[in-house]
Length: 313
Image (cartoon, rainbow, N blue to C red; front, side):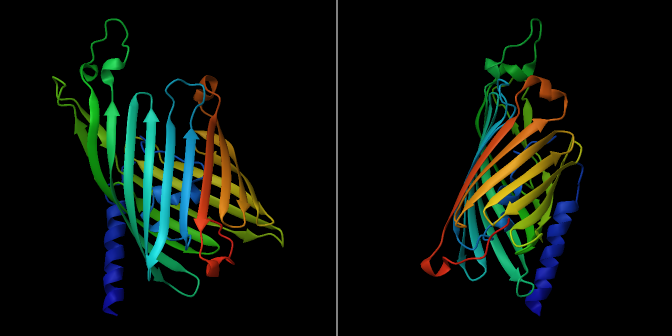
């Protein structure tokens, strides 16, 4: 009884952290295949595969645009004992000459609500190494901006985050703040002590459900709501169909930004290869050739775990 009371108090504090000061510029990397990659934004997702699993994802945004965003992600997750799971994320996010390299560890604790539904509480901690060579930018004639009088090289920015993940085999809801501390970095070489916002607090709310349409087809709608300071709230919506438990095919809509397609092939529930293509619906569509995203995941299971239920998220 005491444990449940402390748990309720802890959840209350977590929700307060998430909703306090919620004034919502997208800064963290975005993913079209977010529903298989939730660990990057929500530490409570760690352990949901119920096995040791690896995921690699490459996203090339706005192809043919020089200096467009490129994101490379590698994630690992595994249950370790009882109701505890651990995870690791390594993320390289480059935009032009701005480079961010982050390493993040995840801790998740599972609480069973009933036989099939669980609530996971997660804690994320790690750092971002930030570099930006301002001296290499070419300015317009007559422009004298103090920002471009120095470099920001290998700035170490630690942070931590929290998350909740409520799920069972056919639906999920997640709420998370992967970086709670609002961080700024200062260029010591700049005569004006120029500072730059390195970490801005982002808020994520996600969910999805699987609906059985027959023996060989399932329908999975999902959503991801993203909010941060200085930008409108953005919502990702997807509609995905699963055929014969092997092949996913779906469509995506991101408010104010893009539409796209998503496909994934599942090999024996262990190996998954996914691809997504985004087409801009904003004025930026006239200046690039779309966005490509490739994902590969693999799960290592013990012999006694070879027969498993399909995983939809």
